[in-house]
Length: 349
Image (cartoon, rainbow, N blue to C red):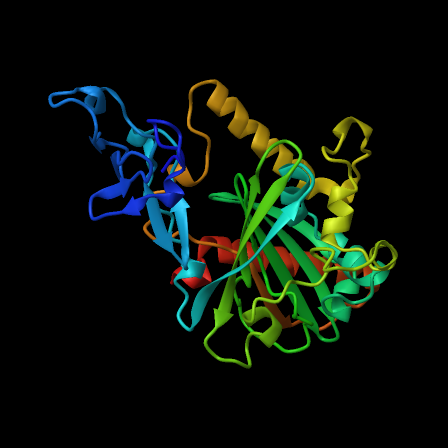
């Protein structure tokens, strides 16, 4: 509900919560949960004031210990999206830390389509904030999903192929696969460790709202993740400026692109293909709205359980005869696995 009473503006956070709504502490006006003004004490009998006013209110949905608010036109309200990764047997969702970034939301959201930075920022430059195996720049590809994009990053770890995929669900939700993977043990598609919404407060500040996917088996999810400790390389964590210079993380890299990154000063390269694709899809959505059409994405979804694709998958893959042939084998095998997941989402089965 809108915080301020429509009578004299007193905040309803001090109001009396009743069975029918919230009663303002100042003069007793009673607002229903849908914004209908039920009572205006002190007004003459027969007053129509309450019938001529309506208080601001939005419908809510409770999930994973949080309240989600729908703020669009009432006649276009979609069903609440239920992702297959949120209904995964043996896992539960934990509301994690919230992060405030002093930069535009887009340069944070683009991070989900930039797998090269995990090798440099999180490993080579700052030391292994995740695992040492992230220090190998992967063979890269990208696929379109029904709700956005996913990157396909394939690495060789000994006799194994490690496929890592991260989901970008347009416009501002990312699902990230576990960062404690090292590719040494063969295992099937494992799903995301996190869902994170990138929410713009204004042009220069952003709120990240994080939900963690935690296994019911203690040995599967690291304790620091289950206990809601901040992820390495995310925020300053009370570090000094010098410490952040020596071991920067996502926060430092993204806010230092300026409060709003100037795209005209960039020189995008081949490895930025995911960022280019992400911006292209956003522009398509913006054009659709300008033309009075619905953008692609969650509003168009009809499935009761929405497939997601963030995962680590490790399979055995003998090396090819030459390094060049092996690079091609790694890339082709990773993309083939990703395309199979797209056709038959493992968590939706």
